[in-house]
Image (cartoon, rainbow, N blue to C red; front, top):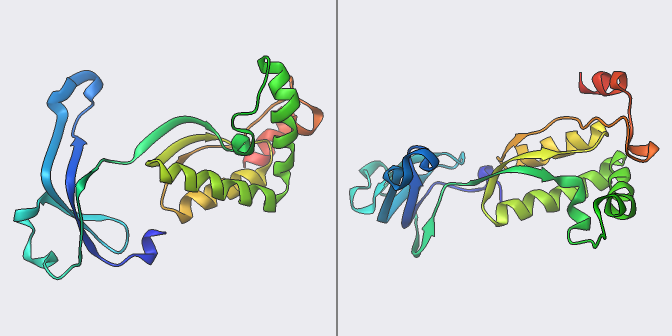
Length: 188
């Protein structure tokens, strides 16, 4: 479901968030509302957050989704993912090189095909959202169409993305290598 397909609503649940970096501040940055409310606008933005009992009158006519038996957290950020490896998750390898040669390189070679890239990235992005990941730093392949498919899928779902064209000029099969110049040209 995309943000554009949703109407305004109020989500009532136990809300938990941090207003500073807990790595440095510990639990003093943690905020929690046992009976909280999020006014969620149809554009996917949070219009208001606070105690459910303090919901402003401007949101009183919005439908309420009751999730008081659950907990709502901010979206997670995954800092290191390889979307072209989605179809080979869990593939056995005795060591890294054998795994790359047997599974990874053949699979990543297929991402010059836009239809294949779009199919895999749809599964990848949907799986991330299903586990609460809303932003990610994602490796692609050397194929510009793979990066285009990745960016489009994340944009369509309202997700945050940090990525770029992958460049490899050694230690891979020829189909996955490019020169520094071709990598530069493709990245323009």
